[in-house]
Image (tube, rainbow, N blue to C red):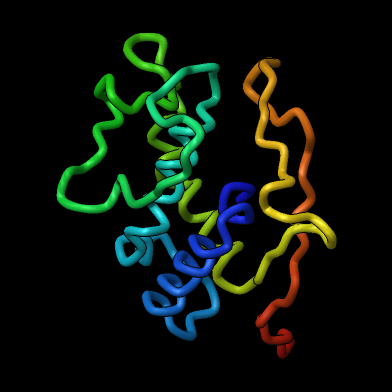
Length: 155
């Protein structure tokens, strides 16, 4: 979410894909995710830049979800993309996260618009991390929901 807030053009691209793929649907379902390749690319790129453990990767500071679009699928079990570790010591929750994270991100982007706090520009966001049990941001960020388009319940 932080990376999208720092790149408003990519946030709008993800929201446009959601609008095109889901139309007026109220809720995102797991079956809808196949219509959202850009959203998956955003998740993969964010996991590449911010793995749960302190890894180093090429172009680590450049946020470019487009690298995951196209014909070449990402091999989660290979050695070129390892946000969950690899081998016997790889994260046992890898498959669940690969399904759950895109669903959660799609759900919070589908019906809610987000922005940075007032007077904060994207270049002011501190993206540094420090190592605790997992990597976590040095400076927490608050995302502001701007508007929702949810309809009131008729119960």
